[in-house]
Length: 231
Length: 260
Image 1 (cartoon, each protein chain N blue to C red):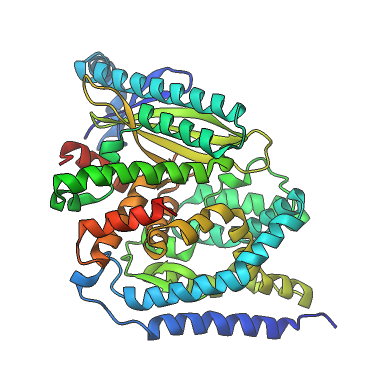
Image 2 (tube, each protein chain N blue to C red; image 1 turned 45 degrees about the vertical axis):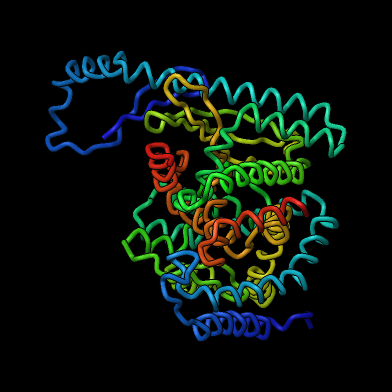
């Protein structure tokens, strides 16, 4: 059983454990001091320090990315070229594109040769840029409000919040940024969950369906994606 | 004489509902595991045909109606209609929450239903009716450990699993609202709820659905992936807490353990 570290929006950190039912829970108060000491030890352990570091680096990257996006949205001139440049900057600066590409094909990554892998990385980036630019209008008028940050294991953090329509016309959309936090490495966004739907898991299932429909050929997916990117 | 004869409208809708279910089940022929694009979808061939039918229906009727609804109905009117449709589901949510032992959700549903019922659900008089997590009989079956079954794309009804489709059939006969004696006007409103719900949902997700329909690599596969995740989100939703999705978390955790 592993603890999950939660950083709420007031930036105070707590450690929560999965709920457990105890036999003889009535005698629990006697052990209150022991439990407190145990929790204090857990919270000051190297594991805890690592979780804090993960949470802080994930928060930093999301804060910085949101600031960038909000700045661009204020000055948006409804021009496809500048929107494409902005999107390229956001993807290259904040997203872990190689991991996104690798995750999105599951076990079929191993079946691809190095030329196909390089080509696929390039096409994935193109398709992502196209998708974001196509949906750019939907981002206008939204503000991100962070609610909590939770570490998920030693390499990943979930930054949760809501997209809120500043005019109050559209209902809030729950969003969670899945951030990779490698030890000693730079935090990067791996996935976005909107209303509990992971964009990357959806893409992975679609990509795998395309490969299987084409007899397990990785190259078929690249061809379909190229066609998509060129639309 | 009203434009719709209530009993005829209800008969028409029921007949199409049943026709959809029968068409889906009758057309089913299981694919061998190696030919499936998803192991949960053994009836992919007939499901894809049903999906094509639904997409044609969408292009011919639902998408244009949703577009017109978005353009012509003012925001307040849209909000009132959405409030009413959510409100009409509260008795079923209370019933299913009780069966699942989720008494807080059941209590909240009854409270919101009673208070907002003063305006027939058109206005939200209570503080946060969205805090109620909608529950159907498919979720109740899941709570009792019934297996999810296979993926089914049903004409007119869209994505389902065997379990959620069985739940929909039970929901259509156990909805407490159905037992309330009502005049012909109320019956007409009830009978029009499912098609209205389809148009309102299509309008509220207009760009997202169009993106799947016109831009996905494989719109059928993407719809299936979205359905499974949305359904998991509903099954995992808890009142007053962020929704935890352990299945998705573990997919990413195992990827990060062995990214090659």
